[in-house]
Length: 43
Image (cartoon, rainbow, N blue to C red; front, side):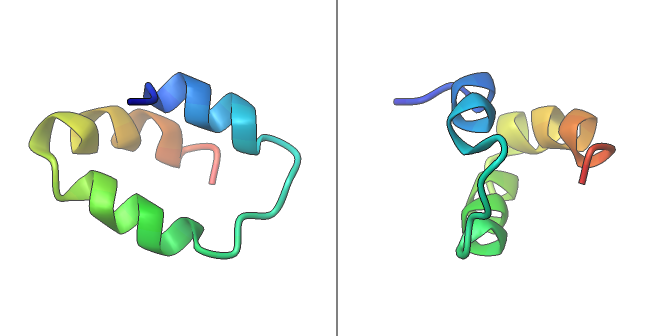
């Protein structure tokens, strides 16, 4: 189980082809969607 911060560090500086799919799965989780909104500013 990765935290969002760990995933962002892992993916930082590299293109993630299926990022949209991963992001959509995270957004389905209410708790995660709140975290994702904070990071969406960067994308």
